[in-house]
Length: 639
Ligand SMILES: [Zn+2]
Image 1 (cartoon, helix red, strand yellow):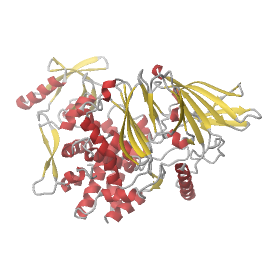
Image 2 (cartoon, helix red, strand yellow; image 1 turned 90 degrees about the horizontal axis):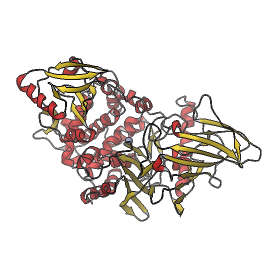
Image 3 (tube, protein in one colour; image 1 turned 45 degrees about the vertical axis):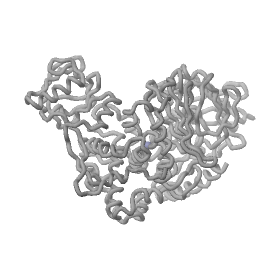
Image 4 (cartoon, rainbow, N blue to C red; image 1 turned 90 degrees about the vertical axis):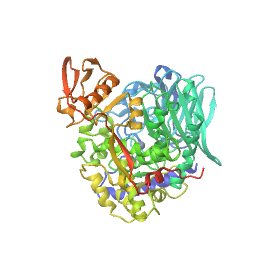
């Protein structure tokens, strides 16, 4: 109940902000001023019959409070955390609307595909809307015979133009027989397979996904009084839940490391929901009191998975502070139909990429001593991307809704991708961290900034907006510096190299050797891709498909391009092992490597002249300097 009143406090504060900014012509007035018919006393209700989840469907039955006359209900379009119009209209099927047992005719809006119109007869106060939600309909698979991930934003319609902080929804779910569930929603009652949750503001229900499955394991990571944090794991097979005790202990240190880093908490009960399956699509979506984490079946049992993806749960957990509690002022909206402005994602996601990694190393999910090799990998990734010569980071964040949704095809290095403001964001914020540490002679760090950024120490799940200038002011409070010029240079202008000062400042130098980088090796194993970006100049899948070719590289100069498939290397059927052999051989005899490639029905031979042998990025210590990376990544909480 406390949470609800705090929501309204912030709604007032935010409306004040929007109003002022709107008057200045910065953002349009939101379409969120309709009187909400669904109140706490008379909420919209949603019953999701998920008993057929294994078949990829769930039936949603809604009762939406209405008034007689023309009425418009809408399907969520801009989903927080996805930073894009990710609402999947194509997952709606078999839609019917009725009132008092009488069918009502519905019509989709001719312009806004997410809006549906009906005429409500006299005397009617609520309409029944029912549809079949396709769980595996289009872009991503969400259900298998043994588990399913439910986003409520896919399961409801709501009254048009309302403010979702003031509009209430009460959800229930009917589970498949024998399945367990996890969610941050409060369970009020359970009768057989039906679970009823408390009525909450629509924004909170939409922010609280539910995972369910036949095989599950719930581990309490932390508790204090009535507050707790859980790791709710679901898997397609029971053996995937046999998490090594040492790894589980590292996850149990995660909450304390986050408290040490932020000095605050803005949630009551947190559920890290983790689905492990090779059938569903990988994803990680943050929520205020939970996270929606989807990973490979062996995520918790294969060490390579943790080496590469060990920041998944810490990253989403950190978002409870950075992204949910503190959020860019122009990314905050009052309902799901209002477009989100994503320009400040270089803070929201870029800084969080650093935070997620930091927390994974500090808690011991990954070993702090391994961080320098990780840093070498991501620095090299950003420094060798030709698209950066014309496109500043700010364009990737501003265009994020497009980059997330559709920019996934060929030449990600020429076009750049949404992943770049995560990876480069880590370099950017590590640079900031090392500047603060160097200028204050180790007395201050970004941890001081995060304490200021996330104060006061305790609130419920509320949201506090920031601007670019707020961030620069807070940094100045920790360490006076021209932060505006710093971000201008690295984020807002074209920058031929990613932030680079952090390497030497932290006592390390970038070198390239034939010795494999353990993170690249693990990534090759988990992604099934062979990275020859620094040698021939391409990345190639296990089947031989070229996923990208680096502009200006030997492969590029020889005419290779994505869309080609390597059939053979010097007459031998392609495999990563064969490729390795010829890579080393060419370094000795300086004979160009002959690739047989297939492309669009044609087959030809391409000779690529690269003679430098295997090449991997590493960081090595600079003698006589302080090892700042070790300090940054060391555990900070007194466990
Ligand atoms: Zn994120």
